[in-house]
Image 1: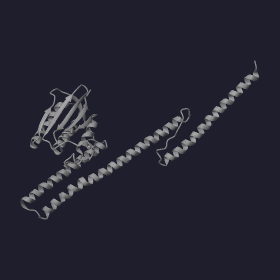
Image 2: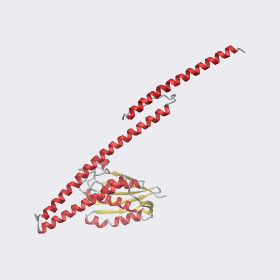
Image 3: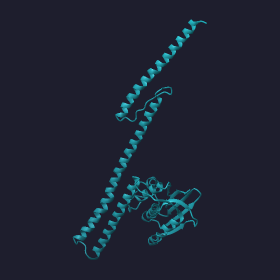
Image 4: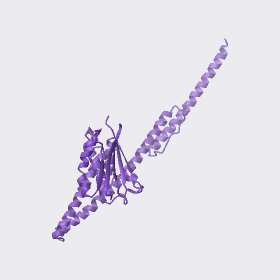
Length: 307
């Protein structure tokens, strides 16, 4: 046995291993320096900073995690800025929606107090002032409801209910209002029982807001309400024959306080459909809108069946 040859190859192998480890160590040291610089950069607020790494690097997991943290923080920052902008717009809208009717209300009351109007005209001013006060009250109540929904502070009482029976009861209360506004109506609800998990008050709010939206904004004279069901879900459809909504406004009609100049009549508070969307989402459902070129609007709510 040639011990010299064995010693030579063993030594050569050790040298190769040491060289390999030295190379790896140098690469790790180099990567740690890059990681340190990247963390300092991210700490200063540069969330666009990323660390390039190789699949063979020992520090690749650390680099991937740092990159993921930076990406997540960047996304959170974007959402925060969007939220700040949204609340600025909200405050601007609130200022307008409260200040305008409040100024008008004060004007009517001052005219009454200073006896600028008397007799029948005074009674008329009182009636107008009362209507504006009710409008402000409804607006504030809707606003508080939306804020609670948005903050996830609303408490719901879910129970297994018969969707068709509840819908018939709610719509029965709307028939006098529809007839008073000279609205024709068609209601198509199956006679069969359909079990679904609902918060009764929230579902009532959904239908009430949709029908109120039709009466206030559609400028039509007919409304259709239809419920269809299958083994997995129920569809609640509310449609009208009014002027419809321009295509450019459709994606925004569920935004809080959004009142498109062409799609709305300037009445209401711009919170009704936003509240509907929030309540539908709470029930695990979806809502979609269609408005064909010839006019009218169809809102379709899909809710999952109770299993």
